[in-house]
Image (cartoon, rainbow, N blue to C red; front, side):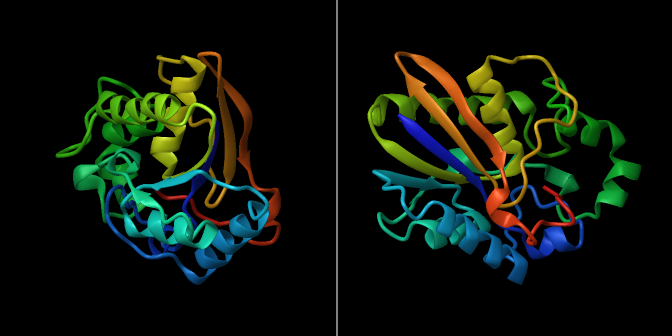
Length: 207
């Protein structure tokens, strides 16, 4: 299986450095341009299936990249539910929810978001998605559109990393990553490729 993973384009909340989590904010004009660039980059790829987080910003991005076959909404690909952090400015969160925010940035399994998800809960649903995909689409080329936190945990799953990490790997808006599954093994083809976004990079990357 060959899996292309794309993060949604920049949103209006990204522009203002507002924490989104599972909040539903639309793509900004820049985000639409970014999604169109990703679409142009992947135009020569034929996808057997397209899966997207059911949040609007991801579905919009997926539809711009691959309107056919129609994207299948997939709650497993949603962003980390950040509970009380959602809708707040990053400055506010860093000041008033420092422990939870650090836990999010480092994927700390023991830190739960206030009224939200733990890292392990998100890791479980993202990992389940990948393993189910490997069975369902063993020889197919697939597109998945998701979010920064969820994609970062995909990275940890395919590399077998269980410990907390610093704020790496980066996952830019409308970046493209390529993952291959062959003979029972996950392989990383490329990560956070943004060469198609020259001149359209996001200034902020709130989640």
